Image 1 (tube, rainbow, N blue to C red):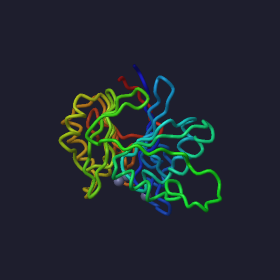
Image 2: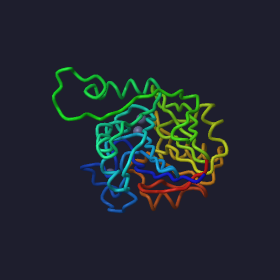
Image 3: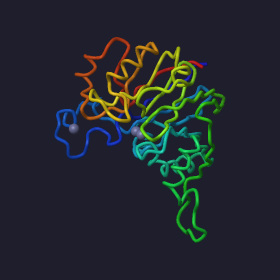
Length: 261
Ligand SMILES: [Zn+2]
Ligand SMILES: [Zn+2]
Ligand SMILES: [Zn+2]
């Protein structure tokens, strides 16, 4: 069956432009140099929408890319740039009148719980408005889950002292926030047609792939198209696009691709 994926953001943790920065990328005004925090959405043929992460730009991303419903969320990890929009999931509770299931590794879900104690461990004396209605469901980062009929195959990714969950659905792979791949990631991602892959910047980084490292991974996996994501303000879309090998492209906010499962 054919489904779609939207890249809701492809920027690193600060987003691009960086407030206060006067570099040529931040001042360019080029729409593809405007990067919200990295996140995505699977739009299933059956109508459900599964978010990958709910970062601090979630509300803006939902308005900009016509996300009118959210049925589930898959958290890759609990860094701030991937979870700080969790409170804004309330809007979808209000409009759909349904709870939202949020999936993640147990380590990730602990981070989400700790970041939002008023949602997951409210004081009995709480008198405010309705908090987000979310059910946390832990997944095996080495396993697979069926989410709204979509077979999601997970794999762990090395990201400093954090393990990130990567996802394969049908012929599409998504591997954000990683430096290198785990052996399972390599196995699971083999044969994908479309790959979204962390490629932070040209210079090396402790916990993210440089563009050189990402290109090497992309070459090994041989996807038809690999889109680099989680990029910084050192990456000018037009300049860097001209320098990338065939089959490797920069992601950009709003990029939409079809995938088959
Ligand atoms: Zn990140
Ligand atoms: Zn800048
Ligand atoms: Zn991270």
